Length: 468
Image 1 (spheres, helix red, strand yellow):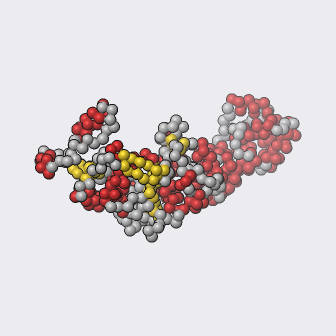
Image 2: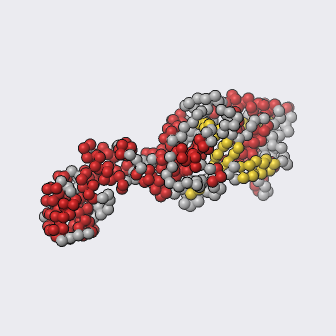
Image 3: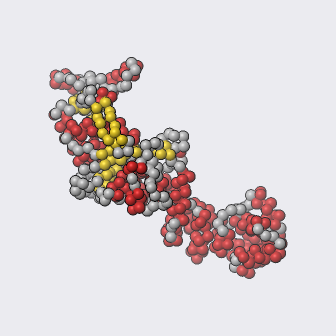
């Protein structure tokens, strides 16, 4: 890399399945790097030892690879900034925390959780925003020794200069100003020795040469704290951009109750990566080009200037629309691979004809399985309305149809010609009873190719049962 190389990163925590909001963040950072010929890093923020697991990490990497992302540096690929798991970088954080302590930019804080909570409630009751009261800010060495002698283990708190401002340009939201009096002194190391999230996050970005960070706007309040820390350490800060949150129909942050499962949940249902990428690409981003985009075309079309500031509304119907386009664009071999489990009930000799018949009408593998049961399974039962339709058609109708099917090898044109001659029926009065008798449904794929895929004996059996 050179100094001019754009470096982006995705830094998830392996504490659960990858949800759509984080998947979009990963995609946007990947596209930002790809568009400029830059560098993309995967870093794992696993300092929460109780909730993090290797199983979640493996699933996360698999999800990102499935989505079509790759990275030049990461826990599975290595790189010049290794290690890429924060749990393996604790010594490095301790060195920088000690530097803050030695320079007076940070100080030990012995306040207990109960004392901090009481202070918070007092400030709220007085109508003031809760900020650290500075209790331990100016303790003498003797006072610190006394507290430690009583068994108090300190946190490390960053000393924020009062009466100042933190100013930066957000590449999504524009100029930002934060008063330091509204920030207050904050913790950079917990009492158990672990580094606070925004401390190690900022230090790692600087040490790994990250030049641009796109992340959710819920992190916007962390940015002034991180800029203060990096300035105190003499480290270079990245350019930050905070993208809009993804919300459901009710305007609340997206969750499973909105019908939005994890990325692995979408995979399991049969969504294609192409569909998911194209939907995520347009959540909070309005590209200048339309239509389904492959990943290179998507990178070319990605434009920070087209990132919106308003919440992005997740729409499962729109995702399904992208899925339909993606499925219809599959080659026959790719379709067969995608629907492999659903095609288990289809005889190999009939598979090509069956796929040709049903693929315009399927969106998920479950749809393929449903049509396989219709074509190759037991004779379908009819609804009460369907029974009335076939009864109205009459025995002569189905007798002529069964005979023509046996003679023609399931040729729909021959069947309809025979029925038309025998009964005089045409249009819906001709085709609807045939479709109901053969499939149990009054809708679905074109009947002619569906009938060609159906075993001849099965088609004749389904027709003749209504000829009596």
